[in-house]
Length: 254
Length: 321
Ligand SMILES: Nc1ncnc2c1ncn2[C@@H]1O[C@H](COP(=O)(O)OP(=O)(O)OP(=O)(O)O)[C@@H](O)[C@H]1O
Ligand SMILES: [Mg+2]
Image 1 (cartoon, chains in turn red, green):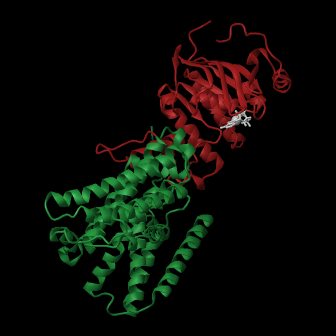
Image 2 (cartoon, helix red, strand yellow; image 1 turned 180 degrees about the vertical axis):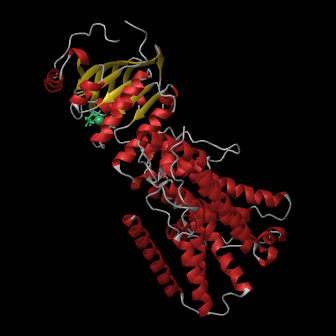
Image 3 (cartoon, rainbow over the protein chains, first blue to last red; image 1 turned 30 degrees about the vertical axis):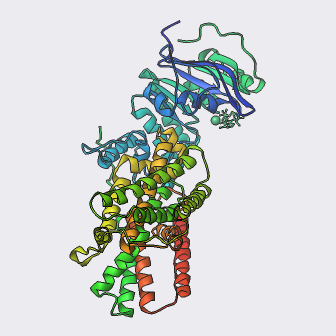
């Protein structure tokens, strides 16, 4: 096995009242690796992702970053470890404009301590144009923007601040074919930079093409794990539907 | 990296001149046409003075409401502060500082408890702050056993604080203007203010951005409590004596101004300066009705129409935007 994984989740469980959303899941992401997380609606994908994002703690289990155990009390803690998230809901404040959302929670200040609106607007504009050249008029409430533009903001801010592990929960759900292709290219570019990516998606074909490793959840349990190059669409779809339980994986990791 | 510079957004006229300021101009013109007494210096000062007490309360409620919550305990806090200031009987020197500081501190405490109930315990803010209102009113009435609070001990220096008229303008008007300016800067130019808008816009997004929602929410209530108490201290100084049962009910006129100024009842939108504009509009209308000798029921009727009209207008505009 190569170096330590960037992040490792061990035997994670999560209950919401009587609902057992996760029942002991292991998951790791290595540097420069795209791990796809698949499963039916309600399988527990977003819950697992949000535990890694620091949105809420696991009921039991352990998270390790670079081999050392960590405890996330807020998304800030995860972000401090370079774990960035594009949430399924995007998590944008609709009443604020793009630069405000881009820098939300890590605003730039002037030397006097006030909001540096000009610098935030310029940096956000550059990052957004980088992602989508047609992105104009960024200084209006994001409520007035298209689904694609909103998604671009969520993506742009997640990769702007020294990201090491990027969690993408259905990042192309609101995008057309052209933008979806752009995101695919972005994923490959980030992987080449050594960033670890946890990609949640319903599009099996995309996943086969983009990911190195595929992990399947069903009813809060890990039911399958394969290397993308050693598998095919049919097998993966089969795992999602049947929930084939896999023998302990041998040598998972690049 | 920014060869591809986006067109910088024009500063729209509507960013600076919001509808309420246009309404204010219209109302002033109409008032001046109706009555030639309206623009007399004495009357202008009276108009300004009239709005200040409610206005300061409304500023605090604006901050809380931008965060997405209500503060209906403010009326009771005004009363508490006025009574406490008078009971401390400031007759000069340190006495005055104490008579101002103690009510403000209690106001901050009331705000902190509101904030904890709403942002830590997750209580509904309307219910929690109405509960606080009963609590404060009850405590104050028990404190004075329902008696009129006498002015005997109060020195002239304390009352002179608010009766001073630099440049012919009552001092409380300057206090109000300074508070409007300070809050406008806090809300629009600081990280703290930005986070209040984020919380009012989408708590979940704010939480996920790592914003300390509870701490900031509690701070909005503390601001509101201190501002309501400031109003109470001003009343104490202006009037010099009072019947505790007779003051109260500031929260709804203040809320009217907040809404008239365009602050969204669902949070995330609103500006202190616009609340101030709304306060002036209401003061002008009330003043004209008084000059014209309209009876109280008619005044209420007009205020009700203004409020309902404002809510309808802003809803229509947001829906249409
Ligand atoms: N905050 C919560 N409170 C209670 N139950 C929750 C909460 N979040 C998730 N759940 C439950 O946990 C289970 C897993 O949900 P999760 O959102 O992880 O599904 P998912 O795999 O992301 O599905 P989808 O493909 O629809 O996004 C579901 O049964 C859901 O109802
Ligand atoms: Mg999900």
